[in-house]
Length: 383
Image (cartoon, rainbow, N blue to C red):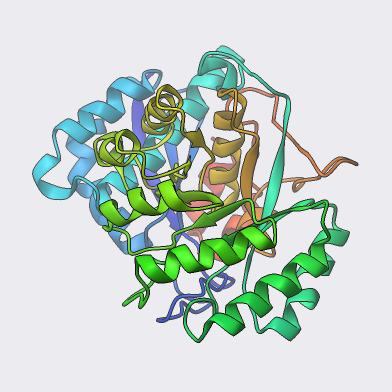
């Protein structure tokens, strides 16, 4: 079964806030879905954390390498794409685009073999996993109104991030965390993401270690992106001294970039993003490296329904991956998956058991958020 064509669909219109200093707008495109079409076989779906223009340009570069390739060999094909584009994008938009291709090829392999992707990765350690609601921080007096409706939906784990945290004073930081803990209650998991990858992040090690001590007082489960993305030595020192778990890694791509961070002990929890790092093939290698070094693997999932589906299968394939990120309020997660997502009575998310990613794309929603050409939509509806 050969790769016949790859299509890209940039998502626009309801792009959620990122909390960035240079804030993205609803019409901005930062997530792109791709469809890998085969010659007579199923279509596979992937997701890329990169704007549509860059994905389409990357596909032009990659086309001579993937056209006519075997669609049932995702890891080999993805590695071929990596190996032959070293000088043009190891870690940038090309790597991100390869991520989407790889995810789609795993989807195809599962559909053809009749197996969920998690089983193809070696076996399923769990049938469901706890999603944590991922929300932006607001002013302290607004945290309850942000968190309580999400708690009412059934979530029992929450991550708050970015916003004014670390950008004003320590009193504001503590007031935000105090309000969040009061809102979610003592029996819920609470995580804090400082957003140190934001432009011109102002804080260093001393701020991070003081803040980690404060977070411990509120039983925060982990402290994410506390420092600038390249501050490896400071992360190593912070992790050794901190009273709370230190998490990070969402800005890194490919296993080679993760290796020194994992080997040096910079993280208690490593968070690769499957739509950036090189796809499922690359993320499973990173997760295995983390396991071998006693580092917990929890996927970063600020992306799309396809990314969430991939995360669920990856979570099923590793014994200590008991959480996945769920970006609340995003139609690119809630509406693009036909039938949506439903938590069970214990706030857990079932891992799909149907072949491939176990995800059916709602083509009406895709059309709504990407303005698919009519001829392409007809082809997608009648492959």
